[in-house]
Length: 634
Figure (cartoon, rainbow, N blue to C red):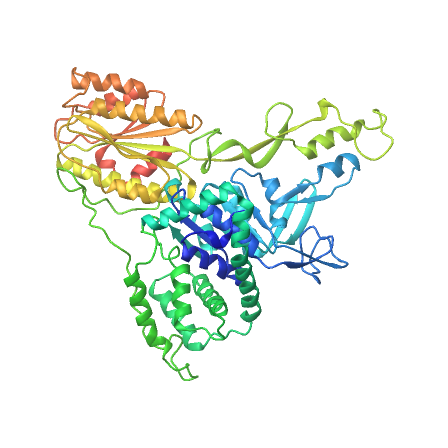
């Protein structure tokens, strides 16, 4: 394993991990960063620094001596072992995470016994999830429950077990691949953003050390063993010193004032900052929390909690932090409140700190229109049961999820209870005389699981030059933003194709990354002629590529047009070419929004809708809320 001390740079990440090792109550670390920045390497290296644990001998859950609420209690004897770093793979099953019926004992002894899962193995250790933003939602729900209660409750396959499960949660992710659900994001105590160094000397040293490690891992590890041992001892000393560290009332008010200034939701941020500041003081060998401890804790604990909207830029700017700390200093110097004070707070709170702003202007023929006010998107749910990628949108048959029934033909994995139930009545006829069950192929039953799938919503927008186009762009921008907010939690993909001038362009490639989506939406261009045929062809190509990437994801196209085509990239009549191009999408669910205006209406959008075998609605019915309703109906 690559030594922790040998990692070059990433001081904030190293400190965040070490503070959690000192005080596991901080709540873990979320590491955000681009690929190839040693995120996984440094997290895995942390395991060697964790102090050894006293555990009850023979306890499958690694409980501390004297624990009484353990399924294996009462315990006898004590043994010492290293703390564990348990990895939760993104593709893990629910059984692997929470545990399941012990199949070996069920088949050989005919008894029900519980086989612990990863939540049990991680108790009093580290639970590490690489690419945590890609973790299936049903696993996220189980993880949230265990993290919130400190216990894992298992009710399945005739087994009912509750066991301690307190762990340090560490996750790594690449934001380009999508964001985390807000509920899971808030469970991480600290967050750190990592980037590859741009300094040549630093990058050179990274390469030098990595090549030396690959050439001779043993010698390389031995070279850094001394520094790792010093860190491990410092963690042990800091843990012992933690109970002696006091948090003065002035620093407590400073923490409350800073959290109020950044307008974070709830009180978890205040508690995490207080714990992290105390751990930092213990790490320094101090006996009292000071302003520098609070500032360090705020820098690590608040960046991911101040995002009120998924389109907000993550992080805290240095000037914002400095301003908030200066304002909070006034509260830190205030005397404690007496019984005659008007109420808690002791004065005005610091001014809220605003996040970084952009002008939002697109590099186009004319400025991009301001989007309509965003709204809470209705659930976009495709009827029936699909087989799409895991998400939280529509019902789907899946390899993971809740078991709804058993089947002899369809399904994924073994439905153990029904298999045993079908075998039980035939044991006497099969000559069973001892423990265990005699099974045949006819007894086997497969588990049919039902979960949720994600979907792709592709907007195809007329961005040609007119005031009507400006209104259309404004309305669709508001709808896309709302759908992306919804996709933030539901794992949907949303894309935008615009057509103007002589061609169409993919303004927003299908994505679940709300940060990337917000950036692309600001760059949409407007003006010029109307190449409707090219817009439909571009939509067709985008969907074909997405089908190759994931043939199970069901798409929905929302086309905003008046049906008039004034140019064509196919070299023929623009209107006829548009009708021909429409036939390529006839097997896709489509909603056409008729943007035609004036006293004389040609009804061309309806013809396009007929060619697409889709639904057509009028422009005067188009509002962000109505559009979401139309999409849901389709």
